[in-house]
Structure formats: structure tokens, C-alpha cells
Length: 375
Length: 155
Image (cartoon, rainbow over all chains, first blue to last red; front, top):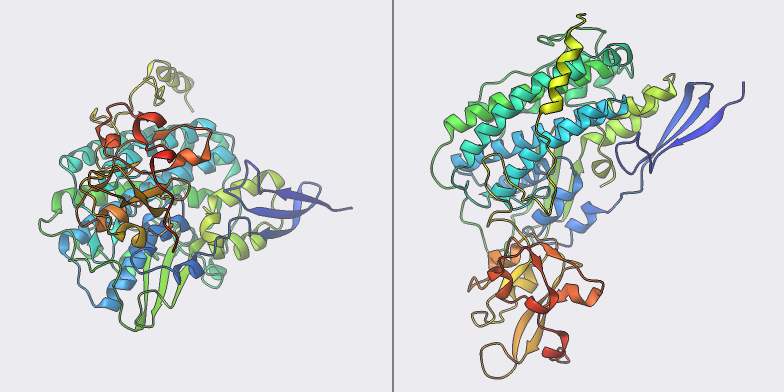
């Protein structure tokens, strides 16, 4: 049988961004897959060495477009540990609130994308419409809808505006009502039962070795979450659960874990947990300062040394290694993005033997973010 | 599997749509507040009589969007240095407003500017931008035309 080649991307509805997957196909079955990133490389790590510590805050949110706040938080935490700063309690809570709102937004985006790759376009219209309520909140809190530039080393940029927490509560109530609609249209849908279980399986014994993190690892059966293992911001004070296989709550366990269905369900359950976390934050929000006194942005020097800070993003573990030589600019910044491992190594392995029709579903179920993959 | 259940979906026919017909309809949040609010980071406005031309904003700009020119009518006698913002480069981070010592430079909730000429996106922000009630900026209303300022002095 003769193989033929197939290109998915960089302009394709079945791909998560500007990213190319080169497939060798025998009939309907993928024999070999190669990931070809490189369309979005902007050289952030190098650019950061030519900008001051302050200016970098405007640059880094661009590394991950659907969820930019994790970059700001990880960078701020790394710089704070170099400066030996302890940020105010209120700043910690505001940060946690922003991160959880971003997580809901990113998961809604991810659910919509996955459903779209199955042909259920109604879901993606709904989720993107609902995500807009979160963007409206971000716009009032931070002054921008996507690139917030809000979490600064030392705290956050502005205080919460009047009535913001009341609006957040309303949006959460609305989203909670909407989850029922998603369950009906997506998780009780025959298309999902038939097409997602057993597709794109990451074996449990290989997951750690391959560097899988985040919801994808939890779908394999590990209860692994940076928010619990290495708590940051206000997470130590908050009570929440880590949804992981096989505890899928009200949802049926239809497979042995690590597949597209489990990943989809884990994301859906995490939205519920984030709503729960945000409700606790609304109740517990302390008063006080929202930031430390920020140094002069033009003459700010960070002491020599290096620091690694990591946060749990909606896609996996997000880390920043920041090296300072005591100057006005970082000496070196390395970003550990979750999509790099998911988007290159993992898909090249698990796409082997998949059906062509399932390729885009597997890519969406891993929630690969090409801007983060290439940086 | 129930036979009646699928018909429940019919109720979606009478639900209100998410979509708004922008710009004919206003964009409002869940409580009905009109967006964008005052905190929104849109075009700059600069009170050029209050501005002292210290060039801090140009130094802190991560995108190198702000340059300085000498202009005649800055509220004071003679030629004075005032900022010019290149909106092809500006990323609306707002660091320039954070460092502004007189707080004359501000970001406004205005964000619509339409022109075919690339030179129109490089202008001296004036305080008129903030005063405008209409969201859409008209070139002639808010800008110093290029003839009104002198070219930068040679270094």
C-alpha cells in the first residue's frame, strides 16, 4: 500500500493555531506524524534581555494568547523571590482571582474548540459567547480584554473597582447555570460518546516520562496540581479539589483514562472548581494594600541570582527561570511552557495509528497553544 | 434515551441572543454598565499645557512608540518638546501614564480611528481626545496636523 502525505496547518480549521502537522497516511490511518512549529516564533526570551524589568511585563502576556495572566504571575513571582519581597495579602487574593478567571476563560475556549473539532459548532458559539462575560470583567478590572498587563512584581497594578465583586458573583451564577446547557449539548451527546473515548491515549506509565502536565496528566490518573503541591498566591487558604481520573463526579467513566474524553471531562470539572474558588475569594477578600511601593521603573535593579517560579495554567505547568546579573535588565529568562511537550513530542507519538478524522480532535483535546509552543 | 427530551431544545428559539450589533447597539456588561469604562486603555490624551516635556514616557515605552518633537502652540511661549505617539507601534500598556510626573498624559476609553493614510496614526495626543463624547475619532478634530509642528531638531 502506498502512503501519501497530508498537511494539517498552518491555515486549517482543524488546528489550534499557526502550527503545522505533517502526516504520512495509509488509507485512513496515520502512519507517521511530524510537528512543524516555527510560524509564530517571536524570540521573547531574547527580547526580554534587551528590556528593563519593568518593560518586560508588557511583553510576556503575549507568550500565551488564550490565558496570558499565568505569564505575568510566574514572572512576578520569580522577580519577587529575587527581590526578597513578601506581597500584601490583598494582592495575593486579587492575583488568584485573576488567574482563576483566566482559567475559566481558557477552559471555555478549549471546550468550544474541542466541540468544534467534532462538528458541534453550537457549543463553540456558546462557550465563546460566555467567555465574553469574563472578558468584560477583565476589561473593567485591568483596562484590556486580552493582554491585561495587570500583575506586576510587588502586587497588582490597580485596586478592584467599585462593584466588581458583585458583578463577578453575577457572572459566576450565570456560568453555573450555563454548565447545565453544556452538559446537555455536549456530555449527553451521542457524538461525544461515540467519538471521544479511547482516542489519543497517553499511557499512564509514559505520561511523566513524556513531560505531560496539567489537565492532560490528571486525565491519565495522577492527582498532580501545582496549586496543591507548591501553593502560591492565595491557594493555601482556599479549599478546592483536583478533578482527576477516575473521580469524574457525575460523569461516566467510559475509558481507561488518558484519552480525549477524559481530558474533556476534566476541563469541564475544572470550570466548576474555579467557580467554587472564585466564590471563596469573593467572601474572603481582605482589605489593605494591593501592591508594595513599586521602584522607579527606569532605575530598577534586581539583585544578582536566579529564581524559578511555577504556576498551574489551564494547559499545564508554566514556569519562569529568571537569571539576574544585578543590572537593569534580566541576564536570561527561560520560559517552560506546557504546550512544548504536548505539542511536539506527545502528538508525534500518539497520532500514530489514529484516524485522519480524529487528528484535529486529538490536537484540541491536548489544548496545545502554538504561541506558547514557539515563544 | 427519552423521545421528548430533544424537543426541549426548542426553547432556545425564544432565548435572547448573545450577539450585539456593534456599533449600532451599545456594548454592555452583565449589570448593564456601558463598556469600555474609564479604566480602558485606548488612545492617549495629553494636556499639553500641563506637560513639561520631560521625556520619561519615551524612555519607559517598551515598544519605542513615543518620540518627541518641538511644537509652537504648547500653551507657552516658544518651541516646546511634546510627545508624538506612533499607533503602529503602541501596545497600549499604559506605562507612559504610570511614569508621567505631572499626570498630564492619560489613556482614554476611545479606541476607534479610521484612516487610509499611515501618517495619521502618528500624532501628538491632545486633551481633546478625552473630552470627546463620541467613540470614533475624527482626524481633523483631535490631531495636530503635521504642518503644525516643526521637524525634530538635529542632534
